[in-house]
Image (cartoon, rainbow, N blue to C red; front, side, top):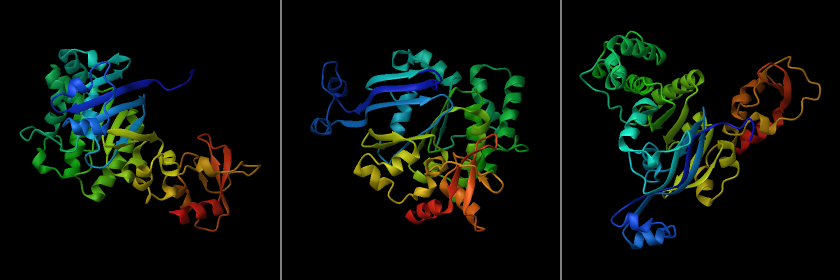
Length: 341
């Protein structure tokens, strides 16, 4: 369709089955194995028949409880773990048909990865850690250090270029890990629970930093988390996994308001609706009102709009990026949604 987003990453019927006989279970002509079949043959379906697409510039969050298969899936997407069957298309190229040498080049030059454990090299300074992927590529010292300094500044660590990892806080170490993953200017950025080891306050700060970085960089991102609040803050779209399969994918609003399965309903039961419902979904037509008081974006959530009613306002103008009124958000609607929370 004209104007539709470019699909940067596409998965088609991706499986990862562990155990002796996994390839036989997924042989051409063999029907897709059920959970019962896998259990009967001592196999584990860590990733089961996953279909998804990630658009260019999108933050696509994959979430689920521990053991749901989300980390295995993200490793399949980069072929750090070899899928048993299916297709993974990156810019239209099937990665499962790529040679090992070609995949190494793709990961070195076009993909960035950040994991829960920072894995910084303890004997290297901040600057050298960030520059290390460029060193592996054979980039000259002057060029790679200049790039590393830019990234250290980007993640807010200017002045700490010569510090060693042991001299940094957990949040600062994760910033180094983020900067290092960006040094090769990746087209596709994988982040596997990058903030889950951090204290709550530092985690919130890192989420804010991540949002700021994405507003500047506009990367295509696959982000793994088990925290629904984190997913809501960061995601353009969310996929919920259970037992290796994606049970629902869509916007946070779709998933919370229209859960596809009892599992998703239970998973999202305690999420306040006001945190996910967009102003655009509940506003009414402007009908001549002008934006002469507080205003809000249609893409903001109702909970973000709620403080604007603190001084007795009966309604708030909803405006587009150019400041033109496109609707009205009424106090009663906000109160009703906040009460549902």
